[in-house]
Image (cartoon, rainbow, N blue to C red; front, side, top):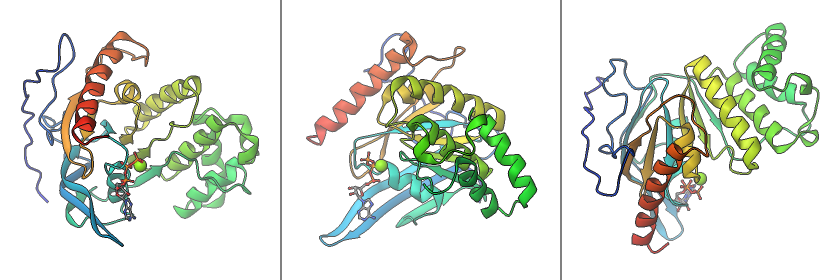
Length: 283
Ligand SMILES: Nc1ncnc2c1ncn2[C@@H]1O[C@H](COP(=O)(O)OP(=O)(O)OP(=O)(O)O)[C@@H](O)[C@H]1O
Ligand SMILES: [Mg+2]
């Protein structure tokens, strides 16, 4: 399928002030100047669920392109269709209309709960993903060791999930997602249940891993600061049915801290935008 030029048209955003970058037109990728085709492309995607009380429209004509190596965060009210969107990209479900393209890339999915097999050790949980990929036994052992080191769990391969902290379990889940050798990582509030310090550490880990592997990431969160800390771009969805209502590129001036003034400023703009949207829908 041909890739059209999505020239990033900048809108004047009357709500933004100072150094906060303006919102770009929904659907326009921050990386749209680059020649490589997007790693993920949703075109006019709608999803309706059949329920006992008729059809429920979860997503309404969502168009979104994510460039290779880009980190896009998605925020929006509860029930606006964020998980639905990730499920569609993962191929776990089909859109009612519109197209989802990943160009045959391998897609890994990570949820809020680590969803590990409790009777298997951390290493075996990771090995299972390698086995599913058809990696031979000896190579599985070596790769598992490497992956445990990548997520800084070198000495914990023989522990079962209940012997690990919440942050450690999420790291095992991250290693398992990486074991799929995914080009695209879909993360659905993966750090939502963690304490702030563990979450900050995992932000650093994730940033490092993404840079090492040129991962493309779609990351859902309710935490606007987390979205600004991690994202190259933050996409705001409307309340249900989810539509892209704003996109904010996040300028990078060196390492970002979640408690920096720079992050706080854009996070405040995003919070205002979300509040306005939720107010319109009586949340
Ligand atoms: N399998 C399903 N069948 C029927 N309705 C569904 C199904 N999955 C999701 N929905 C509905 O679709 C809407 C979007 O759900 P979704 O889980 O995508 O929201 P979300 O943005 O991820 O919410 P949250 O932030 O609470 O996780 C909700 O109204 C939900 O009830
Ligand atoms: Mg969800």
